[in-house]
Length: 291
Image 1: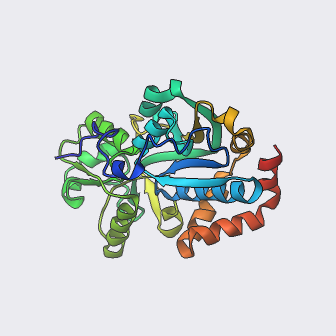
Image 2: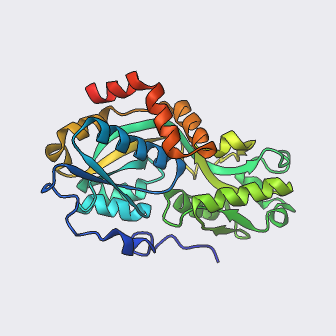
């Protein structure tokens, strides 16, 4: 059975770890801000880079709360989180923003040109499988084991992938959920064995620097177009923390820079890659601070 995405907001196993409602992100502590994040490579780099710059240049401590994406939107809307730096818009997280958009404040894009899609290793015969429509071709279901390897069940990409399966009539396929790390591990195993695999994925992502991959064409456009990733914060955040809000409004990373830094992080660590990025981009970061 394909995974149902109807229980995104309330059903995450991470819910118990969040302790929402404790007032940790409210205005009574103006020296601490709390951001949600999910362990996606781009989100980890950007969020931890923001934490480093804020703590080194402002009299603030930044608390990071790892949580399912749906819970982050809910937390920001309720004021239990100060913000999140990973709102994929307009399509990927469109459903979430439809629900909470009136209760959050969008500070603008952190980077642009991102793309979602279904991805295969480049060695997969392009004549046999170049688009999502081709998944229905005779033999392709068997070569792929009737499986599309997905990511976190709460991810907007998974919702769009469910829609894609329905729109393209891919009744012979199951969408398998897993962590982002499990998805890339499955991809690596398949590549090591020379096997066919389809994974849900996106750019920027370090896997494009490690493997030779290509997106399947999406003629129906069910996985959306090029997107921007924005910072959103709770209502009242700009009034409570104007310096931090201004910094987030100014923070912007070129996509190619982000992709290179994420690839570096896989060879060392996110902390080392972030330190190197900060050391090599002092003028850009100062611009974020100075506006």
